[in-house]
Length: 100
Image (cartoon, rainbow, N blue to C red):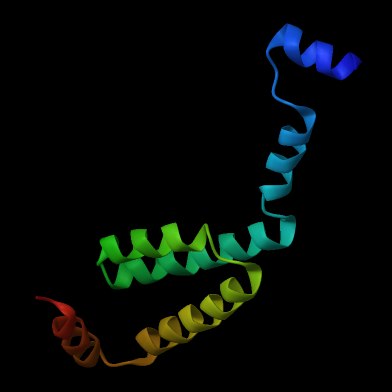
C-alpha cells in the first residue's frame, strides 16, 4: 500500500515493471561474449569494408541468446583465421564475388 501511494505520488512505474526491465538486461557472461563478438566483427570489418553488413550483424547480436553468440563467435574466429592465412589475391577475388 505504501509503495502504491509512493508510485502514484511521484508518478513512478510499478516496482514489478522495474524488476521486469532489469531482468531483461544481459548478464555478465552474455556481455563478455557480446564484447568478444563485436571486437572480432570490428577486425573483420577492417579487412572487409562492407560495413553495412557488419552493422546488420551488430543489430542481430543484440537479440541473440548466449548459445547462438558462442556459435557466432566460433564462425567469426574461423573467418578471421582464413582471411589472415589466405593469399591476398584469393581474398580480393572472394570480395569481388559479393559486389553487385
